[in-house]
Image (cartoon, rainbow, N blue to C red; front, side, top):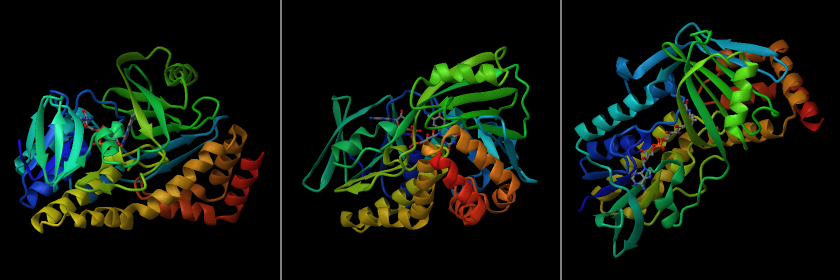
Length: 382
Ligand SMILES: Cc1cc2nc3c(=O)[nH]c(=O)nc-3n(C[C@H](O)[C@H](O)[C@H](O)COP(=O)(O)OP(=O)(O)OC[C@H]3O[C@@H](n4cnc5c(N)ncnc54)[C@H](O)[C@@H]3O)c2cc1C
């Protein structure tokens, strides 16, 4: 099979890259290993309203399970603060329905999606890229977009780096729990969730309760559920996945190949959210790839990296610093930091400047508060 562009993976990043490229008039072939788009899913589905707007998406109602107005943050000893706004800040999405809807947009723009076909290898030679599918047939194109998610094997075959630090995560979808439908909860405790945190995300009639940690996430999640008083929750679904916290890879393009979304590490290092930031990068990739093909000049793929860095480079830099800080701080330090944020105007800063996807401004403002900074450094060293 021959096409201008071959997109490997039909998650959000693959669909958004395909949509943009197809809209520009190039032929797009999407390979998805599963027989149904969006399944199996592994995501908490929390996606900011502002981020979806930036992606130019008006999500249909059937993809939205709940709307939340803010977040409650809990320290190891239970010191908490709430960041709230008067309007919905994020949707809790049915990721399976959302992924299917995005794929339908790509299809309607002209992308040809082939399901149940797994890309297994890549060869770049004589001005074209060839992807082998299940080792049985070949798809040839001018550019390959690797949107495989955290596995990202095709990008590795092109010589691109693998995203760095990652944590395993487990999530239970439950009913029979008493949660505030308007707020998500984030619980930070090194002893409980080293390297990440635990979350409670209210859905239509229950919650998604999950935890990421450098080791034993399932055991730790069950300990968290007991601690949070959710022992009697009725578990209706269990999922697991890998959260990338190491930030974007150094290089996201090679000869005839670009990589997008989780495959490129385009995930917020602080929260593990990748739908919006990965989606923004994927849209840029789709446009740059189409442009390179229409001009018959694949050396233009370099523009993809230049453009996403221009929009998100600073964000990834500050979120990376915040992640390093969170990984180092002790539980006692976290308690002190939460107290400092609560007592020294941190909540107001987060309410005024916080943006779920573009966190750099709020992080800089928090660090600009000398007392918060001093507290943070003191506790980090103790
Ligand atoms: C537990 C957990 C909770 C999360 N919660 C959130 C959240 O609340 N909000 C948020 O924004 N992000 C969240 N994320 C991150 C989010 O899920 C990812 O950033 C996002 O799905 C990345 O999209 P993607 O298209 O790059 O990859 P994926 O969504 O992983 O899609 C990749 C697609 O490629 C297909 N594929 C893979 N390899 C091949 C191959 N060789 N050939 C053909 N097809 C292939 C896969 O089947 C899949 O369909 C969470 C992640 C985890 C693990």
